[in-house]
Length: 174
Image 1 (cartoon, rainbow, N blue to C red):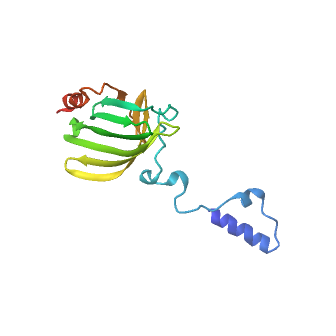
Image 2: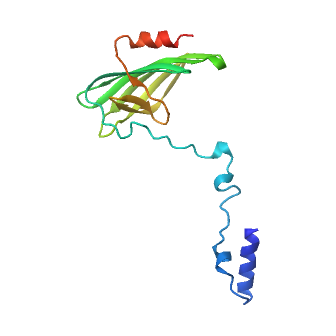
Image 3: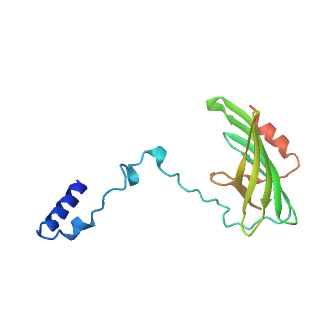
């Protein structure tokens, strides 16, 4: 329909007819077969999740531990911030999705992190999930009040480092 309006307006102006009204001139053709909200759900961009720790102060040198236990995952995170600002650590846990009958253990080694003026730390990662090994990178927001993996709406709470691995095993076991 828009194309017909534009074509009609152009034909009138080319033939010396009345100038098209401003509303007809403002009509723009669509940029593709599906524009804006007409995109299928799987092609629409995901909403951006802003970390609750995005404005938190970065960690100071030391050893920090965090814990999370919910209906699907039990996990621990231990990171070491060195005097030179480098950060490394381990994230491990158990996925226990009882409704789906899915259980898996995972372990991720975090390396090459660096503290700067924000709580965001980019790590190189090596993840093992039930015998499958993957390399990649990940951003974690690390602060005294918690740890949040970038893009996820979860927070690991500060925890005692002593006995953390046992706590994960006890709470996450099927």
